[in-house]
Length: 274
Image (tube, rainbow, N blue to C red; front, side):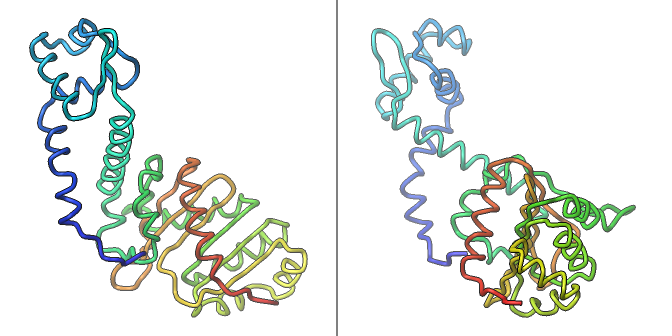
């Protein structure tokens, strides 16, 4: 994560008046919603919002004065600046919603390995779902992920820990001709390989359907893009991987988000020649 200091006070000063203006009136919010698609007349605004003419007229003029609305031939619509601002407010709203919905994934977890631009693009994960351990099945995330992995043909994965089952699963996938790009933390790469059949690994490397890199530093995220699905997990602040929670998505935006994260770390990893 980019740790450049952000001046939150300046950020607040820049947007406080605008946010207050927009959010302090339900009437203005209703009008912005009505104006978000096509230009409309005052009569249509009255009909769509069930508000009286006086309330609409007053707030339309305030929106015009604040640079949100333009008018032409008795019809009102949002201007380009308003559209851009509202789209960004929409993204912010979705990001806050994702943080709140998946609170148990973020809270008390290490997010230091998530790139800054990925943290500011959390709305890409809006169609994801969180798989969590349950009292009757504490290994539910592990079980579901294994099924996903075993049925996949194209895999990109950041594996920051060694679990005895996964090297064997990767070995079987390589033997079947699946395409695999694997990135491991510096301290576990050799341990991961040692649990696999060396001949299978060498053949996969020779046939170019298996590539493995080692990171100079330990990466504190678990990430896999398998065919048309992505899986994402985090370490807890105590340094242990949270095996009880896994974020899953087959949404294109989420897969693109995950691919960007993988490609960054993969680009600075060291090739392991077998």
